[in-house]
Amino acid sequence: MAVRTILKMGDPRLLCRALAVSDFGTMALRELVEDMFDTMRASDGAGLAAPQIGVSLRVLIFGFERNLRYPEAPPVPETVLINPFVEAVTDEMETGWEGCLSVPGMRGAVPRYTQIKYGGFDISGTPMLRSASGFHARVVQHEFDHLEGVLYPQRIRDMTKFGFASELPLNGALEA
Ligand code: NI
Image (spheres, rainbow, N blue to C red):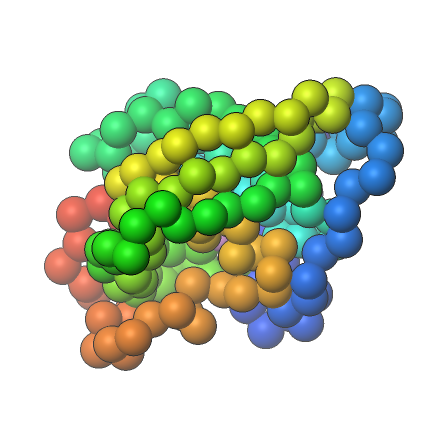
């Protein structure tokens, strides 16, 4: 159990496509996921991807019951998602504020699909499949992007809606 250093934007490792996990249920995978939860909770984040702590593997965690940073967000089930896929089930997109633990202090308005289907495997290699909408769908799309080497500023369409959290008229924003 350890809180790991979170890489910040500018570090080239955040721009790499992460590698698929091939061995499930291993001690190394369990330790990685434990460290990710410790690290996410220490920063009060809504999610974390393994590349953010310098591990180039397709491992995501996300979820929370209630988060002080986004009190209006509905709870998202605590999830470990390995080798995930994400598929939009609508063309409809919605713009919402996001932050990222790898882009500290900043927020930007990012369009995301409002409804998705996603799946992958848990830590033991058991497959899962879910539907998600709204904030839950936003969190998953943000985290999945980390596995493709994409950070949310690359998705902002209106750069006037990108700035420091302290200066923007925010009412809670995802940070993941
Ligand atoms: Ni992020």
